[in-house]
Length: 162
Image (cartoon, rainbow, N blue to C red; front, side):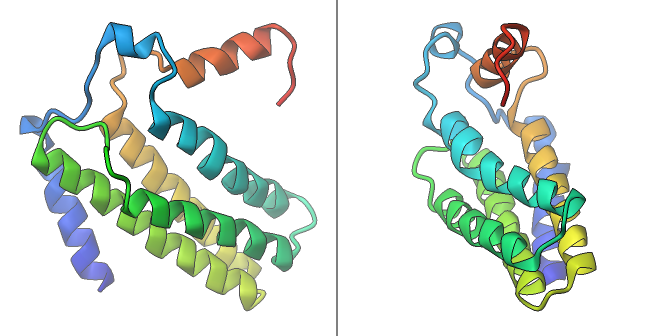
């Protein structure tokens, strides 16, 4: 099963030269009408960050598992996201392939945490990070500063703490 998912993901990523994944519209970028960006920032990043902090802290399996449960719900929502920011059907498939991969990896994180296998939970967190970063590289144009990144930078410069 993992091999099939990898082949699908690799095949989809290999053909990215002809895929137009992201709608870049200056007017849309200036408003907060991007529900996916907000969802990722508020629903996915928070439990993921919590798990990473726990990994570097006291390493309590129950906290890993709680974070994984919340992440699992978020990954399921991504798998069923109605309007991904894509221009083509092939880019849509790439989006859902990343979402399904994330869902599977979060399930593995949850299983490792439930079994108190902290080393495996750490490996799973790294796999989740790699999947997220790969998806972000594919769907976020490097020449556009997203509003969430811009807001975070402005908040940092204003002295607001996370």
